[in-house]
Amino acid sequence: MDETKRVEPETIRMLFELDRADDPQLYDDLIRFKKGTKRINRLRLLAREGVVMQLSLLHPVAAPRTAAAQVGYVAPPEPAAPIDMPLAADVFGAPITGG
Image (cartoon, rainbow, N blue to C red):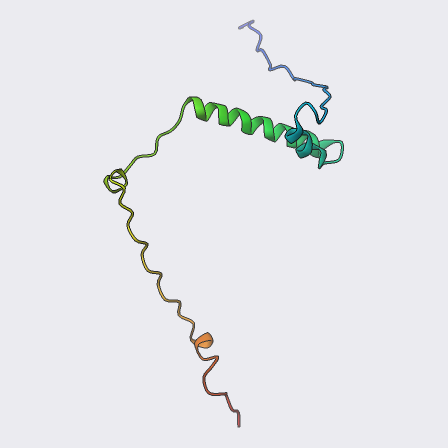
């Protein structure tokens, strides 16, 4: 039998105070939520987005450029296909009379 122990990730618990003077934008964003789960989830989301942003700045993914984009040419947009709406087109037509 293999006697090596599997290491489980440790749960991080935090307790902190945030005054508006410390970080007005973060304070204003978090104060919108009442104490509890919503505020904690918002803080967790902001932290996650921050980590993703930092990683994307370290390893940017370059979008492939086409030849037209390299010389600054912008193709005009394709014309939209007409919408087939026979009932709407007849709104200003002759009134329907019933017999």
